[in-house]
Length: 173
Image (cartoon, rainbow, N blue to C red; front, top):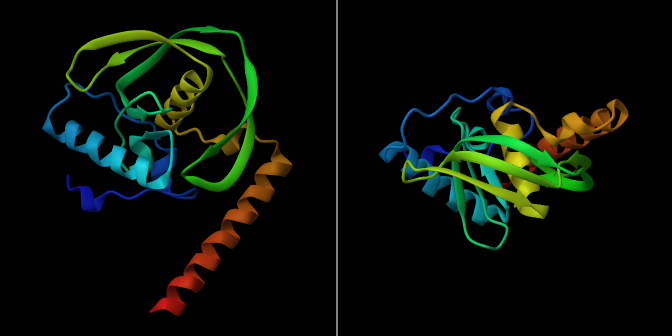
């Protein structure tokens, strides 16, 4: 897999709705993917990214809320505590924000980039970002938390953005 083939997928891309497959073992290909995902996430100013967002149907996520990069393979939420609602954005759904109710604290298990089983409690924004990225592994997006009326408005907005992007590309050619 070449880094140049990876690109951020935007709402409407079918890759975002596929359920991701378990990773049997973290090898060179997965490590290359993790590096490429980190480059894309940082370049876009994000705090998390899931493999489906770059078109790869593997259960791999990365999160960095300012405390260093965390890579999780086959992540699972084992326990949840509390709840809170906060507006979330998503690199794959540009310029859209949706109120999402999530657990305030989660106990997560998974595998790290060195093939070690890890588990830890994640709270506040870190826990929220992990939950958001795990949603991507199931084909779920923030728009799925919005009311029907808001989802329709979001679709209209994103279609307009796409058309404007097309027009912009044509003008530059």
